[in-house]
Image (cartoon, rainbow, N blue to C red; front, top):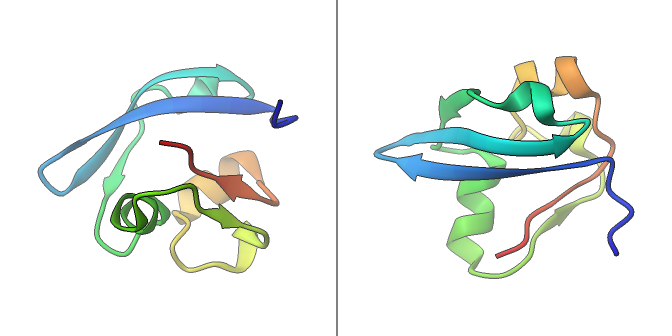
Length: 79
């Protein structure tokens, strides 16, 4: 439906974003943790609806380790 190469399920614990499950190209993300403050996840959660970044590589809300490992061009959140 989204033509995505991967998907993940994450939880927020305190001020940390935890990846608990993933599929496709994002399976290596399982166990990944990052600060929530200022992140894409925080933006998506605060909006309360789907959020899409069309230029993920140049968006400061996207965690640099995630960019280096997966080189996403676009990110979308779904609730």
